[in-house]
Image (cartoon, rainbow, N blue to C red; front, side):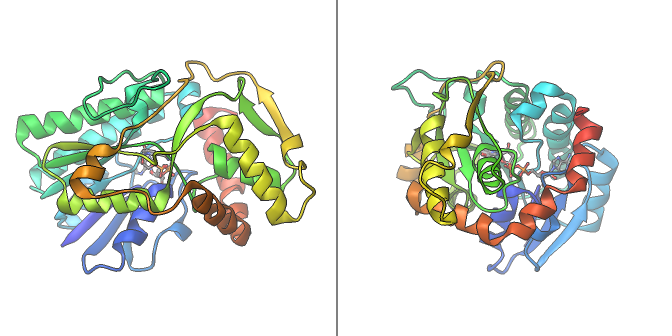
Length: 336
Ligand SMILES: NC(=O)c1ccc[n+]([C@@H]2O[C@H](COP(=O)([O-])OP(=O)(O)OC[C@H]3O[C@@H](n4cnc5c(N)ncnc54)[C@H](O)[C@@H]3O)[C@@H](O)[C@H]2O)c1
C-alpha cells in the first residue's frame, strides 16, 4: 500500500504521519510548503514531494510518479484571519486543490479518499446545542466557506462517480508543531517573549478543543473501520470560553517559566472583534464514539501541559518557523 498524505508538513498532517509511520504502508507526503509548513515536522521514513495542489499539472505529475492506494487530504490554507484579508488563496488551495485531487483519485481508482474538514462548516450554535453530522452547513468566514465547498465536492464525486470517501469534521486542535498564528501556540510564543496577548472582543467566544494526537488517532480509526460515504464529527467534549482558556494557559506558563503568578495575565489585551466571528462551536462526537469506540485519550490539562512542554523544549523550531521565510510568504500573499 502507498498512502498519500497531503499537507503532511503542516500541523495536523504531520501528527497523522507520526501516527501512521510505525505501520508497514509506504507513506508519501505532498505539500506546497507555505509559511505554515516545516520540513522538520515530517518523519524520516516519508517520501516528500513539493507541489501546489491547485496546479493540476503538478498533481497529475505526482500521480504519474506514484501509485496511491489511499489518500488522506489535509492540505489547506487554514487561518481564518488570513481568509478575511484575502480569500483567493483559500479558494485555490481548499477548493481547486481538492477538486484536482479528487479528479486524479477518480482516474487512478484509489480505494479511499479521506477528507479532513472542520466543525466551522456548521456555523455558530446557541448555548446548549451541538453540531451533529446532519446539521445543515452555514459557514460564516471565507475559510469555512472554502472548506464547506470542498466537503460538497467530495460528496459530489462520491455520489456522481462513486469514489469511496469519508469526511471528518473536527473541532479546534492544539498540540506540537502548530505554526504560532492560532490561539494556543501564538499565546505561548508571545508569553515567552513578553508580548501582548490579543483577545478578540470580550473573550467570550466558545470553542471545543482536541489534542492533535487524538485527532490523528480518530482519522486512522475512521480509515480502517469507518463506513463508506459516512461523515464523522470529531471533538474533545471540552468546551472553553477563549478568555478562560487564556487565563489557564497564563497560569501554567507562569509556573513553567518560574515567573510570579499573574505575570502572563498582565499581557492580555482586548482587541477589536474579528468580523463575522462565530460565537460558539460545539461538536457532538457521539457517532464516532458509539460506532468506532473512539474517545480522547488525554484530558485538556494533560494535553495543554504536553503542548507547553513541547514548545519550551523546541525553541529552535519556533525560532525557525517565525523567521524570514514566513514574513516573506505572508507579505507576498496578504500584503502586510
Ligand atoms: N487546525 C485545526 O484546528 C483544524 C481543525 C479541524 C480541521 N482542520 C483541517 O485540517 C487540515 C490541516 O489543518 P492544519 O491545522 O494542520 O493546517 P496547517 O496550516 O498547519 O497545514 C496545512 C498544510 O497544507 C499545506 N498547503 C496549503 N496549501 C497547499 C496547496 N495548495 N498544495 C499543497 N499543500 C498546501 C501547507 O503548506 C501546510 O503544510 C486542514 O484541511 C484544516 O481545514 C484543522
